Image (cartoon, rainbow, N blue to C red; front, side):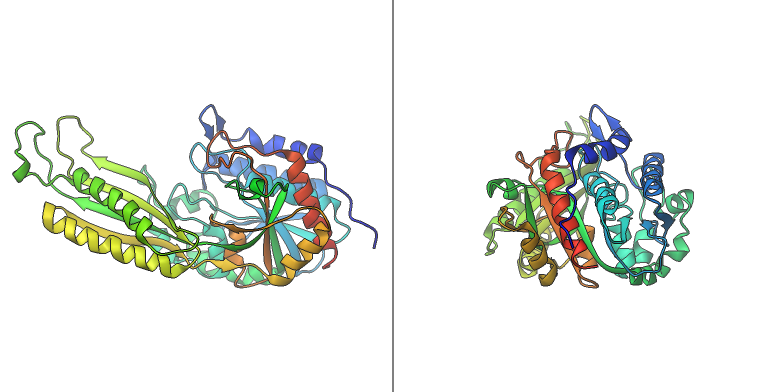
Length: 402
């Protein structure tokens, strides 16, 4: 077989241009799942597929498929088109555009998949579609979740044309895949630090998201003496600092990471003592045992704080992933396809759909160099020449497999 065709930066730009404007504002990109912007991204997906003669469908979880007009199972490429709030233009979108470029250039039949609600930004349901497909989604739990406006996820699914009662029927569609490869912007400077346009992901770090609620009592900020206060925000502040200090104390190599990424306060008034606070904590580690140690320490500190402040504190784990190692044969094939070009192995600290599928079928990821490391922000940027090199690497690898 002759060498695979090279994918160009111009091809990626042409495909991205139709998606980039959807949900774009001065603050960043907003394409949250199950919204009109999400539906517009679906229309972009369908148009891209039609241009390649691929057949479009949605599975029971709302994942979008573009498949060849012949029986499967197929090797697939893809990512997602939803975003975080005020996110960047490349997270997910770059992988979706590259997937169509790869399928267009391939001399073998490839499918393209865009996973639903990968970010989980609206209902705190990260990797929703891929987890439903893999059979690891807690359907009963997620359907009860509400967004900031009080909308139930079940209702949002119905409005988007997805039957919430059918979520449990998603896993059989996984049988249509022989394997999956995802291209994604590097959300760190790890690949850039190696002086390479792209890197091959060895594994995803373990991660968890926890919601911590603080229930105190509201009162007058001026007239209430310190000994009579049950200040929920003061207790939350102490736990946020403690969580960071406890993270630094965990023995982990490489060191684990934790973040207090979101806080809600009520009443949010200048002269009132806060009565109710919710804090979301994000923690990641190469070894899941490090997360266990950190979470146990956070729970112990929460118990101490509750006793000392009179504020009721509850820690609830909302999602958790044990981390995953990607398919060794696929990684070896990617490395062989790279030849003499630099293509380092990297540990990825973010969660991705490919990682959700990896325990069920052969899967791999290629990260595109991000010189600044900025992601989940409007300033996110990659050189499309680097992305084209990464896409060509995937193309060459998959043509050798089919």
